[in-house]
Length: 344
Image (cartoon, rainbow, N blue to C red; front, side, top):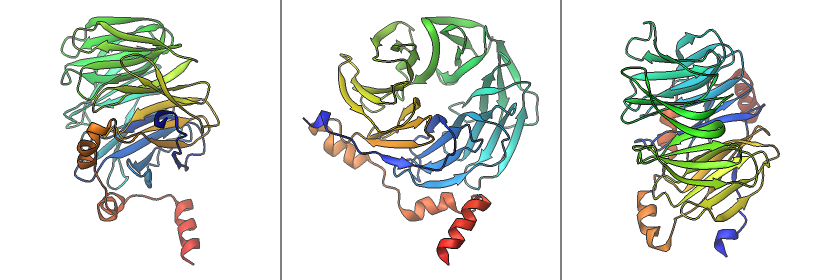
């Protein structure tokens, strides 16, 4: 059957150490983009549809644990073990700002309106930086019970979600008051948290479990036991009919959202899978692994009835459009040398 056929992914090389975080931009006028964080200290930007390398952000001096793009894919952010979070120009690769922290930064997230950057890490403090006044002191929203593992925004930037590396549960904070408005209880620490594209669900991973929560009323909607310890999961964004999950057994599995039935098991990575994310089009998803590679897996149209809809809505990115993003982007000396050698 088609759903069991062997998938052949696009393999994206470039990182020299494990890939620990992935983030897709929304669809922009130039298509959509994929940024990756790695322990090699150099986040990379790619064409989200083809996986083609666009540029590398150079400046961190320690492992990069988290990365994200703003809504327009014009700025990137990264959080690092060098005790800093950095803002980058996603068109040129230039470092725009560096925010010093007192310990490792494990998580970062742009607000939906792109005006704020949220960070969290080993300091156990959630900070919000004003992108319109980057030199101003950040607002410290709250002290968390433990080292922060994941952060994101929801409810039109009125609520902050955070999880800890050493305790279970997801905490939801009111941005205005800094108070916890709800805790989503889990037995194990939550390693991944994602708000669905339509704002309806929060997808979390803890231990052997993938859970889906109502993002507005906070009730548990679905909970599925996984074949192994999972580190990351992502819900298909257009129709929400399936989700992907990856973890310690090196495989990426596709499941039916409504029943939990396993639809596919994709093998190819040579190390545990640290992160999986669906592209905004829903027709592909990316996985990042301990083996240092990113793999982009095609899912295709969801049903025969949806073929016309998804094909017409698919964003084709031309070479000219991508060149706009590449032009002026800093390229490492090593890559320049390789390109010069090829030219000769």
